[in-house]
Image (cartoon, rainbow, N blue to C red; front, side, top):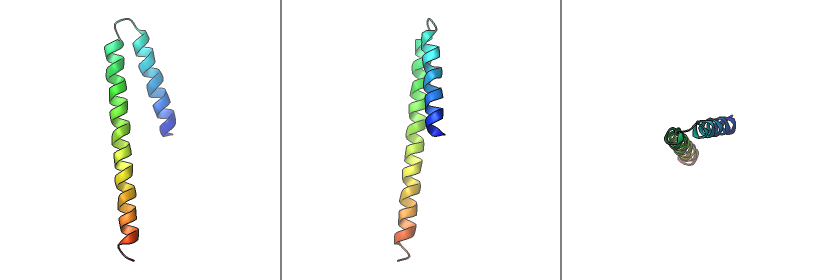
Length: 59
């Protein structure tokens, strides 16, 4: 699901870039997509860390 979202986002950014004068908009969209992906990765890492802690602490 996330892979599909990344691909659609990338194609949207490319479509914007192909419009004359839309390059900055495309760059902004790509930056936002990358930032969102970074945030989701950080959230997932925190979740995994929390699960590991929950698993280790009781034992």
